[in-house]
Length: 313
Image (tube, rainbow, N blue to C red; front, top):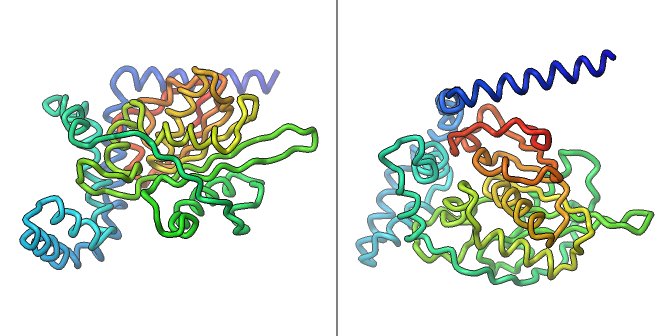
């Protein structure tokens, strides 16, 4: 009786918060959270700002030398990743991916998609990662996050240095009863280049599409890689994604379950703006969305995650 009463109170509280969001609190909350986290987002940026003059000079030199504004931007963006992350995460991506915040910007995302091509996936086996962190079975939530971070940090090492981004892990866990579980690690953005035809699937093209739930080359590549790796339709699959990888994981779960291609049972996202998309995930998929109150990135979609029985934020 006591447990049932507690459950009812929790459900009532969830419905109350959902009603507040529906009445308009969502946008205000998102803006407030973004402003609150702005100080935390720019706190480490002073090191990058100190390098700003050199970064700008490098970009100008590249532009003058090649006559290409795109190469000028690329030279600037690669000179100081910390500064660029602050600019993109704090301001630029919010405007690019969330024109609904400012009505006059509606339609900008469509125009940007026309510039940022999204092509077709080219899936290549990178071999088996025999490093211990990549082969251990996870025992706790922290192990899942460590797994996707490991793949993100060791992408080039596994691919022999020849990679266009988007390297994922497909791990098989074999159980005593003969059944299998699969964990797929999906890293986040690696390339903020302004190139219109960027071979890196972790670039702006995927971000602009995934934040709205549109199909991406990254998602198509993940599903194809799972099939090539031998994932069966009856395997229990957990998708773990960071940032862009989380958005792709949510979209992949939605599409794979609807089509019957794979049995996605769980999704874990870390620092991913999935407010627009996670509500479309079928009820059979349990989603855990991890968001840091001091991280502005999950707020970039301008919408709170829905309060649903299969979605926990």
